[in-house]
Picture (cartoon, rainbow, N blue to C red):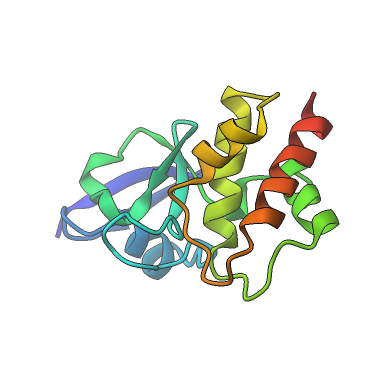
Length: 153
């Protein structure tokens, strides 16, 4: 079985896995980073969103063989003390209900705000559009992203 050198949350990991193993399962089953969730397995829901070289990416669609030598950041690596502006805004607005989609939502929002730190409401809606929330917390999510943008600016 092949081995892969991965850089996840600024730590190096050597993983033995089939080349076509989805990154999502490597993160969860091989590394033990279970904050990234399995939702649909086809890249449609956003629950498995991570940052790959700073861009929000669906980890269920990536094979481990595709991500060597790339910077992988999971929700566990977004901030050392859960004090990223998006995480703070999420708590302040009290966004989570069931919480299942929240890691993917936060990872999408943080990557978006890195690119656009002062977005309009329409830009927030467009950026967050691909993440499904089973509890329909979309208004709270939008409010938290706006609050985080104010904390960043």
